[in-house]
Image (cartoon, rainbow, N blue to C red; front, side, top):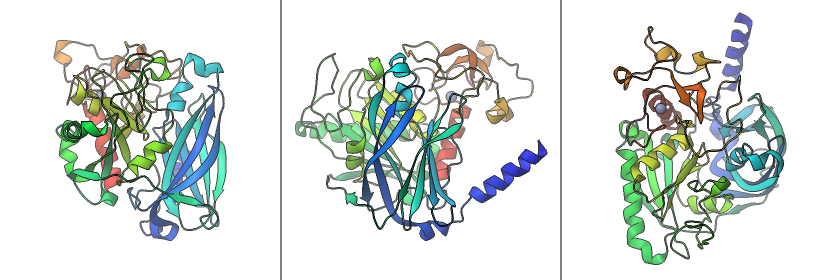
Length: 422
Ligand SMILES: [Zn+2]
């Protein structure tokens, strides 16, 4: 035990890069890698298609190595000459969710994906990793990127940007970009009104409100050819700028897009660490994937959906509910601890919120009136009524209730804002 602890400490020391290393290894620009991600439950492959360059890097200049490991996938960027790890990021993607569905068990499907990193000065080796059934990362692909040899195209799609909330410099803040989807030119007034409502929903919610100096929110003024969203009623196609649609993964309210290359072309008009897509439809729906993007529609639960989906996309939070139309298979494999910070299987509860509990807290904690807003270990979470536990009886990640993130979800969000703000 002691030996492995020492080893762990050594590993983490090796992984932490001093601040000046950003300039040693990177230009303050972004390299976008567009690739095809395809496969099934048991295997996936990555095929890089092209590179793009954006003229600024919005992420942290000091925190270059991911310290959370929440996602299902990961990129690791190594300096070729020294073999030093110089950047890493975990993320999840729609393909990763597709793999957990019945179709994804046997039928291969391809998704157009984009991953970003700071623009390297010297040749780098980039590894793409995916979690296996034991939740361990396995390498799927490795590429060498020589910045002198690749042809990285500049973005040619230009839109105006509105600054909605500026807490600080983009290298020292979590930068969210709002991308309007399904707003035609005649919806211009509504677009401006809706992006402001979205900003307010975020900034009036704890812990976003308290972290205001560590958050920036901007909106790209992007228009679609037609108004509305595809599959609002089944079969209806709408010509929108991003091509998002309901019935994603055959779930009516799951509003997502399969290919994100164009999404990043639109986002690249603003500095951004994460994306919220604002969909011009009254139909209830949305979605959020860790370090990928979130979507929200202009529905009656707009405020709630906005922050709930950002909980997924910013802090990798799990759904704390367990009765739903979600038909995933083995979403959380038995016998393993889920990677999300706000649910536990008790396999490794020490890695979750155990240290935040009062010492006399029973496990599981009974759902009673007295325990309302008491931190505990309540059974039922992550689409499972049994075997998975949540920290609060009713959190914004469980019920349709705005501005009520539990202490564990709040902590995970705050940690992420701090990570980007350092
Ligand atoms: Zn919670």
